[in-house]
Length: 432
Image (cartoon, rainbow, N blue to C red; front, side, top):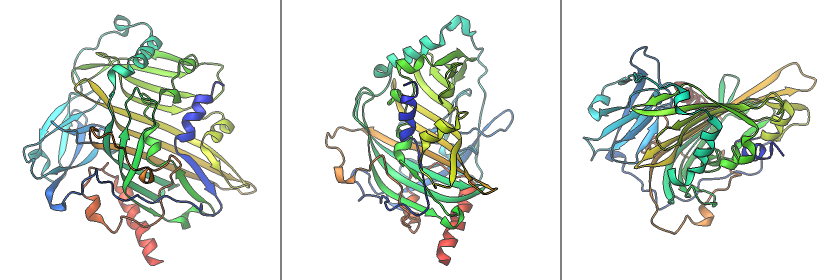
């Protein structure tokens, strides 16, 4: 019973489908939803930059980038880079850049027009209070965060536009890249209804020649990212029952601009053998809202952790995860917090019986909300257009022939290695 919620969480988070032949089912993007407007390619400009630490020049991953006065946003990638599309009718727009532990910065678009633009953030220099002065009970703080969910997080139905990406690597080589622009009907945080997702457009490239004798796919699509919203789905990790299985303690507090952020470390208690989580929770000290959570699954018990992820596998192989790390970031506007960005990194190893070699696969799954609005129309997406949590992004070569379409959306700027992999995979398929 201790791992019931943990297993439930991973039931939806990127199940691996590993079989000897291609799976017989796939999901195509649905007909474009009328609520996402197609933008004229000539109606926007693209701005790119890299966010770094002013003192040491280190890149700042997962910094939040937003257009002041709007809900348009994105995040920096693991190299600190971002790409933002802004309408030409907003030449005077300003960009707000925030990162935990740094002073926020507002920059004009004119600062992002030069090649290799760089934005430097200053580490916070505010003297931090001692933890003992603030609180002595970290677990009590987490319970307070959960109790205040209805007050701190949106109680409205919001219609969100999101960019979604999943990649699969075999060793050091990319073998699959899937991307999608999704429309999300994000249910109120005090509702028991599930979020609704439709795909406006999706594209995928995969080179299965590099996958040996297995067809390796991820199940869940954008739902992987949505179920990582632990404030929307707290039963997945921190129920009242599950809290007893964890140890919580304060780490040294930090600041995001001038706002105090409590940092809480957590891990499973000694004697709890089932796979649970460990990591850090970042709590806004003013209203006790969860700002971010960065955590990993304890994979020491290979058999149990394997059951959480692997749905099907070859009979002549042992399959188990070697990495399961998660990140969720929330954004705040006018006193309410919203799902903003999530990232999942998974590693899987296949030990072939009666063979000396092992095969390692790694996958990165990330989604960023690029725009959202309050849904005042009570009519939800047509049921036939909604995707299911069992989705596997289609293998059909959809979208890569439409570069103008993908240029319209604020995306998570891909690492150069991914861009190179796309070209290599594309050439492979063209040869065939």
